[in-house]
Length: 182
Length: 133
Image (cartoon, rainbow over all chains, first blue to last red; front, side):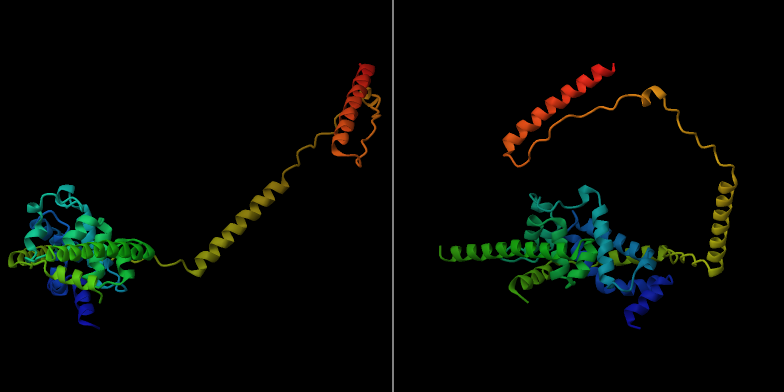
């Protein structure tokens, strides 16, 4: 039995310590993801706390055929969806950048962070699919499970997301070149 | 890994966030404060063979009883044949004296023939009706 399976078994019996150890490796990734979807850093932290509490409470419903991270993300996405509208950022509507929590967490760079751009250009589900694919390295099957979408929907929308962001990336590169040549 | 995938991964890593000690404490306290829900109740065991056998027997017995009750009842009297009025039987049969169109002629000619046949038939029917009443 792997250490993760052992921790899950112990947590299922009610051990909060085992559960804390179990989710330790996933917490920061989840917080980072929630930060890109919440209206403030505090909301992202609250969403993380709710996600972990719900996961512990309903651990008995966890199906070991899934990856544990897949299951956690599914809960996190449900939590984000259930936040009050004022607590979530409407993707594509980031006119006031000063209130964007992501803005404060991104290390200074000479170009815009692609995830900020993705938030403006992609829908919620496509954004999440892209995140799960390129940050969490999830398989298409796992992503479709997390999003409760078909595998073909996931593939098509990952491709669309890629095309959109690729165009942005190339546009940035062209802008840089034109600046360089005056 | 292609350029876009690499860029996306790098940019995600550039989002600086850590679970603060305060948040860690908060989560830990919350988790210790709750108890996970009990394992989902097991599904009821499937019924035994004797249950299904007894059910089948009951069903068969009920069906036999209903069939017996239905068949042992006195049959309802079948209504007899309706009396035909003798006057109606004496009505003269209508004679159709209509020439049929020759089907080998062209269609237009056939239509004309059919129409004339129809007229003749109508007149014959009228005559017969006048004769009867």
